Length: 396
Image: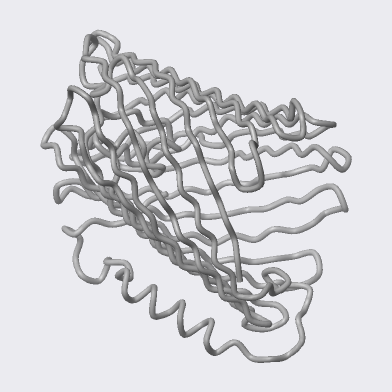
């Protein structure tokens, strides 16, 4: 969730996109031919292609999402995505890429072609050790970048660019105990001068142990370096977690810890509690997920290291074998210890109804509502509706 910026000294810079890609290719191509073990990433399917295309027609009553009374507009979008996967006895490698073209009727400055690409792989180093690496590139509207929306940030519809590179190694010390190391580098930038880009570098180590069949306990340490306009902030986090299986279809999780961090452009540090709780369950044709997380991270676009309280929930119902209802909600409350006057609350609600017309074909009706409140400014809100037509095909 964090990484380093271009302003950080060379010693802090994460691997480049080409470096990650080369590593992925080497890992997959050198996979030995010994038999699979219990720790294999997955049973190896044949090499496979996946193609998906979609068309969208929608309306939003505040398309820019930059002022309380912004203009509404209709938008037409066409997009496509292609995935390619290779699998060996002990490794897997995948590439994917796609893009969307957007055409607005009146607000023509929002007409853009957005695109993204992904590369990821996993490799069984030994019967006990697994390495995983990935790299993701996105150029899209800031309001649609997962690096922002997943943490509850709602920003104006300007172009943003995000690159996230991850690597991890896990080692099974015993049948019940697993240790892991993780590294992530993330950079986000924007075309608009009103939004502040930045980067984060995160390194972490953890250990988990299965106490009983239904209970697992873990402990972790994380180091995070955040950079904005040449200013740096370091965060140290220690936390413990417990998860419990409630039968075969429900799980509960709890995390408790503390973060010590230095806000940007300050000389003092602060310690704050972090953690969270979550529950997911499935029964019959229904599924529900709910979680609350409190953490410290860099708020891209705002140029602040914030304390974020994030609540998210999801409910899914399979109405018929062809029709699925999906409801999602996110609410985030952001505080900046360096600025007592700053408080930002974002709410994002989405409802989707998907109907499978035929094999590979589906239509989706969607409704969304967003609201951003930052005192003393007036709230910014928007709501919209859209219809998607999608087609997907897989072949070997």
